[in-house]
Length: 415
Image (cartoon, rainbow, N blue to C red; front, side, top):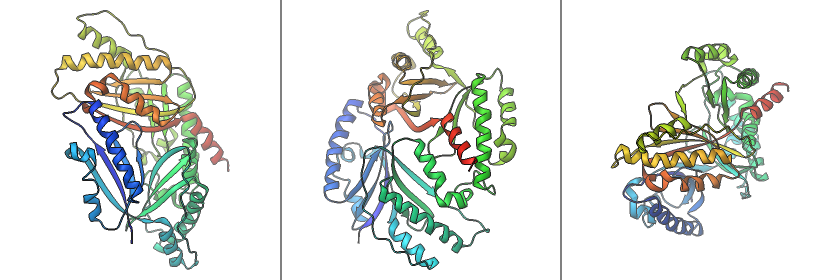
């Protein structure tokens, strides 16, 4: 019997250059493809812009997980800087059959062959909770309906594959869509979300999904009016998550409190809304300050380039910069090159906007590209990644315009 495992591997690298890492990673990828031929590797995906790989493996024994990676180049060269976790899975068809047996509807599901197609790939994790208002049998009844719809989506190719985490109320799915918006629409239309969406996470307990959507639609309308007035500069929804990134302009901290007090979501369910505020500064101002320090009082002023609206795929990227083994002057010299490249990207429209976190070596970049592959390619070419990539940590999130979310919410609220 084959055993399935979901794996996550994150990579750090110290003591080698970025170019040496990429050469090593290329050899590693070639060796990893042999695991596909052996049937050990079912799927593997790299997270765009991050040094992280996710996938699913099929092995005859857990011991294979300890031995199969030993011969791979990255593990041989810098194994102490790779961190992997493994989660036991079961095929969703088998779980769906078991749940159907529990509720007595007699549905049987054979393994549905996955259909790999071109598109945008997302790995989604669903965690289900249920409180005293539901019995276990109630949960199984909803989950049986959910499983049936999910396996139909797998047959159509929207879901590439999905699995149940062994002994946990957690499902991992790989979906393939044409547009990030499809992920939100699909998640909101799932039977388990319609019937017990408030049990999926704690953000809107005791509030029916229909009411939650109406509240969010009202919230989005208020936020977009604030954007029209120039109070909100950027506002984006994270794809598939109930999370929003917002950059706002305020004369003083009091304004932020006053705005939040008047938002519909805070008024109706403020105890379940978590808000984190981070002070930012425009990147052009940072570039000007660094230039003065690096070039001994150089009076060059970097102008803030207006955002160029364009269509594409949007990613919110967080850069965290360390500099072990370098002086501050050496760091700033590299950072000045980086700032010039980043502001040049804003001029071309690839960079929608970017900011430096006040008092921290952290940068937020809103990127617009035509495909996820561009995120990696752009990151490879950045001066800071080329010269000190081992000291830079990136987190990449797929986002969608808040205006598009507002349109979807209005349609759903009107049903």
